[in-house]
Length: 386
Image (cartoon, rainbow, N blue to C red; front, side, top):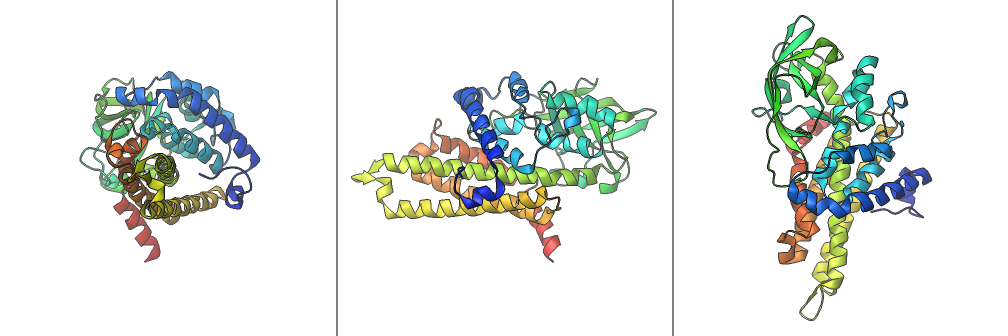
């Protein structure tokens, strides 16, 4: 990845303050997370107190309002934190530790002061874990036709239905949840904050996944959950549109993380080809290997630069839904090739547990599905170019 210094491309996006933040986060990850990742991956879990450690250092606060414990900050501070946590090599862990990044933006953008005090501040301080509930077992990408119902009953909504593939689904204290409060389609959907100790709220055991093993992922069930109307975010039946706003940031950071999968694969390969010998010389001595690495490096550089450029435009206040969809798709196309080529370079060892490229190969597969599939991104892009 880019390093602070004389690299003009790096300096275009990052300042000395970003560099200081990067060093601090990298040191924390190296000391507190990386040594334990293999254990947490095998256990399929991680210590809850890690959220508090991260919050105490201020890493939860970046990009959030200072009046609720945040430290404001720009897109690139968030990118620095995200990239450096990804260096632990467990992308499911990173997704769970920062699940609030997709759960609290609607509260920030459309919530009341009372909601921010109750549901934002404890998350920033690391006392609460926040999750986002959108996907349903029968719905997948068809968000506008979700089935979870919230029927008004005086000062409450009665919620029935289920959600699935929910990151931090088991550990969460609160769920920012899309529910149907009106008629069919996008116009009948609202956003509710559902506290997970609400009677009738339950979760599955952690779901067993191909990758993201350390991620706490669950199915969630609502059986006549009474949720106060005061927990509704913004206007009734406007939730779909609030969530569409939220997807821009989620997809940007999925592109950042996907680029880090590619970067880590490249770095692992660059080390391995200098050490591994075959037919009397190192793998680096073979032209076919060198050219494969050159192509990998070129793709990683191009994808990262494009993602940074889109982030800069968003940071300047521009709404770039087409470009962020392109960035996510391109990052995933690159990582699909790079993870495949990396395991090929490692040969049999690339298929063995205990080698980082094996985990990256598995963790990568969800990136072109989660946060909007490759096909949905193409649909969004096509609507903007036709």
